[in-house]
Length: 206
Ligand code: SF4
Image (cartoon, rainbow, N blue to C red):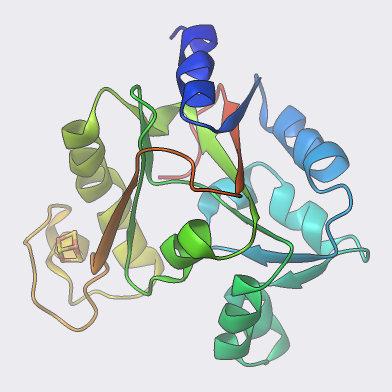
C-alpha cells in the first residue's frame, strides 16, 4: 500500500490526512494534537475508536464534554439529547465504513446521525480509519460494507431478525431494523469544513 500517494489523493480532495503505524500513535495524535482547543465533541458509534484506545482516553479526561449515545446509555441519560448535541459540537469523531483509493468516504447509516454530522454538523471532523477499510473503488466499498460491517453490526446492535445477522450476507431486507437506510459518498471536502483523516496501518473495526 502506497500511503504517500493515497495521502496526496486525499489532500487533493480537500481533506487533511495523517498516517500512523499503530493504534497507540493514532490515539496520541488525536488526543494530543487534533483535539487541541476542542471543548465539545460528538462521537459516532465506532469499534475503531474502542480498539485504538481513543474511547478510553476520552472517558479518562475532563477537558472535553463528550456527546455519545454509548456514554448516555452508560449514565442513564437521554440518547436523543446526546445525538442532538453532537450535531452542534466543536468537533465530531468517528471512523468510516470505507474509503476508496480515489478518496471517496463511504458510510451506510441506520439512524443518520453519523452521516448527518459529517455532512452538515460540526465544522471539524476526525475520521480514524484502519487499513482494512481502504477499498479499490466505490463498488468494492459498498460490497465490503455489506459483507464485513453490516452482519457484525447487526449482531453487535442486537438485531437477530436481520438476514445479514442470520446468514452473514445481505438479504436486501425491508425491515424496520434495517441498518442500511442511508448511504453517503463524500467525493470532496465540503465548504468551510475541516476533515482530518487518520490512516492507521492496522486492521481496525469493521
Ligand atoms: S439491507 Fe438488511 S440484510 Fe442487507 S446488510 Fe442492510 S440490514 Fe443487513
